[in-house]
Length: 501
Image (cartoon, rainbow, N blue to C red):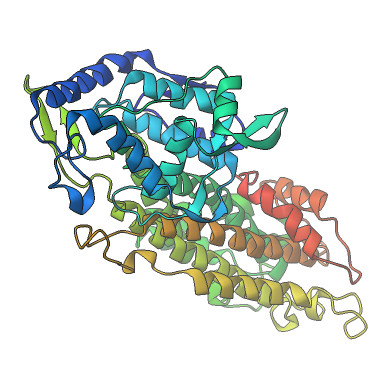
């Protein structure tokens, strides 16, 4: 059961919803705070006191007062006018994850939205009803306005939705889908439209998925490194505990410890203890320092997203705990913190792929390994794994071209009222694409190292053998020239699912 309680939503919960787990429950303990906040909004409307987004226009139209008779139209007009996304549709599962994040922000009791509106939003998730949401439109400030407006349209019974029936998504009108699920379309009241669309839910979704996939990718990168060390007959010395104790960066120490674990008691490593190699190339020797820095980037993302998933991110916010109602305008919708950690992790993804590609090249070079060129059965007649490096290098180039940083782009909007935006949605989406590319590079390294080990007379150690066997179960050894793309494609989902953790 996934609880919507404003305090415990996690990236793994979000990933589960995206993957098809709709056992989402609204925690009734949040209801009182939501209803107190709602009554405060209703009191403001009754008093006629101006408050942004409640009885005024939006953005640069903040100075325009709206009469009480038009407040419902104000909210529905906001949603309809801002539903202006472009590009391909977000996958329906991702839309449901975004809806859960939005609901979790609203139940904190500072948005002034009705409890029944949140109930309807959660009911749509449970019924597998995902509004059609074009991917592009958020600037990462003022919230993810365009995508969340498309989401809110579905809640209002307008536009198109995707409905999951027996595991198959089918498109139909929101009106029909809600009727079938016995969910009443929501008629928005004062402030509700703004509360629904003014938040960081789309970028939160993508960075949550990035954190989950990156965890699997990081573990796979360590396994690939260990197998490459085994295949290349490289040295374990760079992972010596004393070396890292005198430069005790947490990520570096963690990676070195994991490498000592993976390589321990290896007959293959023992077989060349007395070889003439003094120092390996940096892609082997400096891997704890490189992967350690990447580990620390991932840890920063985990800390940031744990806070953001359980925060209130719309504007203005309602506070009643002092005994008086305070309506405070601010910028909790601004995605700078998400954009910056996304850009940071994107650089980390590039570094995983870059150093992995270098080790593939080394494993295919007989000067490094003492094995046949490109690990070919008959070099010349056979090309071996030569093209694996080409594919990996092309993937690295694509990551490099996409890397940004997206947060360095600022485009002024809303008559210069919204004059600094984060592009956090762009940063987190680009990060997700590059994680897929990077997983393909790591998969290519795994295949190369697996083939290299088939040329060795001794086996890997007990802590690595199960990982090697998993790779070979998916991509059997094949010394002949053959297609390698299918093996990469088969390994990528296993990597991103976290099977090497």
